[in-house]
Image (cartoon, rainbow, N blue to C red; front, top):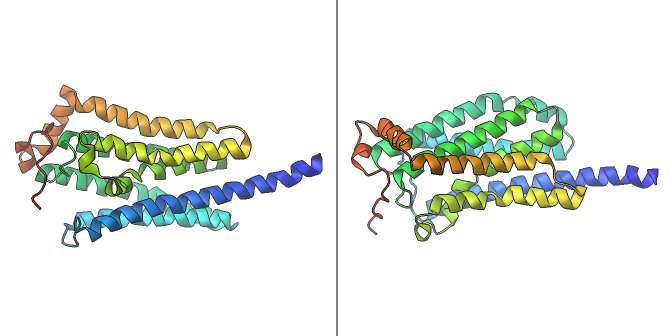
Length: 258
C-alpha cells in the first residue's frame, strides 16, 4: 500500500502541472482570439492613443509572463520561476495604472462601447481590476504556500479573460447584460479548476472559493454602486469638464453607423 501511495503522489503532481499549463494556454488563447477578431473586424486600430498601446503591451506581457511561469514550473525550473516572479511586483501596479488611465480616458471622451452604459463600463471594469489586483497580490503574499499561490494567481488571470470573451461574444445582442455575460464567461476557468481538483484530489481546494468570491463579489459591488447616488457622484467626478459629462451615465450610447 505504501508503494502504491508513493507512486500515486507523483502521478497527481504531474496531472496538476498538466492542468495548470493547459489552462494557462487556454486563457491566453481566449484573450488572443478575442483581440485578434477585434482587429480583423476593424474594431481596433494602430491609430489608437498611445496610452491604449501601453495598456495593451502591459496586459499582453502579463499574459505571456503567466504562461511562461507555468511552463517553468511544469518543466521543473522552479528556481527561475521564483526569480522571474519578482517582476510581478512592478508589473501589476503598472498594469493597474495603465488600465485606469485608459478607462477614465474613454469615459471622459465619451467613447465607451455602445453595449455598455457608461457608468457600468466605469464600475465593472474598475472592479475587474480590483479583483485581479487583490487576487494576484494575495497570491504573491502566499507564494510559499504553492497550493494557494497557484490557484489564486490562476483566478487573477481568469478575471482578465472577461475582455477577451467580450470580443468573442455577440455583445450588442446581450444588451443590457453584456458586461455580466462576459464576466460569467470568465468563470468557466475557475469552474474548470474546481472540477479538476475534485477529479484529481477528491476534494476542492478552498482557494477556488476565495477566487470566485473575489470575482463575483467585485461585480456585484459594481452592479450595486452603479445604481446608487454614490456611483452617479463618482461618475460625475470622473467625467467633469469633459465630453463624457454631457452623456447620460445610465443610457446605452447609440450604435456606430455602419
